Image 1: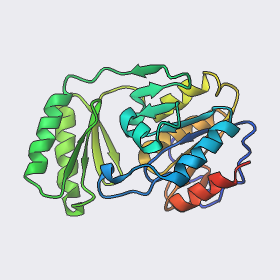
Image 2 (image 1 turned 180 degrees about the horizontal axis):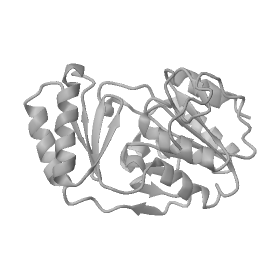
Image 3 (image 1 turned 90 degrees about the vertical axis):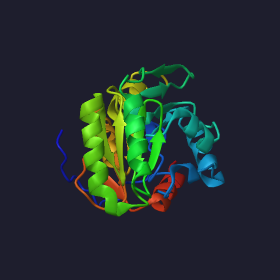
Length: 248
């Protein structure tokens, strides 16, 4: 399905937890975007909310994020067993079983190339995720064009997938994405037969919105209006948390 504005400004109705399955992005959805990814840590409100939701949903809750599994467990304090990390390249199901795509052999060269590039351009941050490497330019927005050009070149040279995001360009091992993760979870218990709801803020979340929609559910875009396949929208992280807290 191509991107098309489907009620992108409409607030979603109160969520019925009796038959829903929740798939939640983290950064920009459950946690505010910050300058440095390692600045995001555990939050009592978020942890308590996720614990309540997981119980009410009988386990039909998964976090689907670009972060690594270790980072997600740290930030979420280990409260959510079902995780799709690095945009779906690593996935842990509700039983705790892990499936991971082997890292692409071109990643080492890409990491070295981005570190050299960032070393020559103050304000750029390189995040090595093992299965991907991200170049963050939030602290140096004036370098956006250069960051995109360099990551495009390295993606071609190293055989990696280029994935743009919010003030970040990521080079990732070819493989599963967020939509694939949603479909995989929905084929397993306890998600099987539920109505999928995917919440996210970035372009990387569009595949999750699309998968939820195709499986009879819907997406909720968090943030400003833009073209999206999500049926509903909430303006920011605070609104997203408040909406989840109202779910019954």
